[in-house]
Length: 74
Image 1: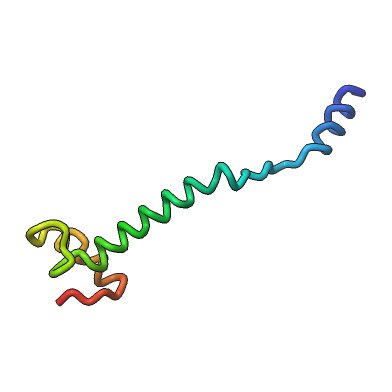
Image 2: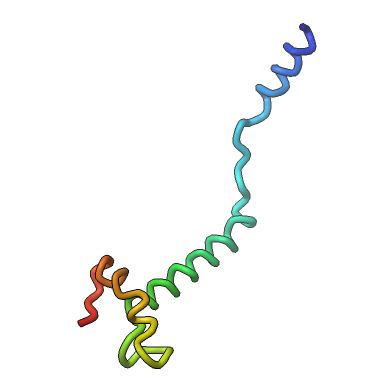
């Protein structure tokens, strides 16, 4: 019984949630931000003069998402 009380006291000293250091989190935040910018480009601007791919395949693939987000396309 005394061991249980001592173990409980040790657990109370430790924080329940350990913070993630910014040094470890920053590369993932940058990577996620770049992915979001790439997705925004394809949904919002991949057509016409700024097109990276020929044809209308990318435009048709993201067509409904374009309208959902309020980008005009026709």
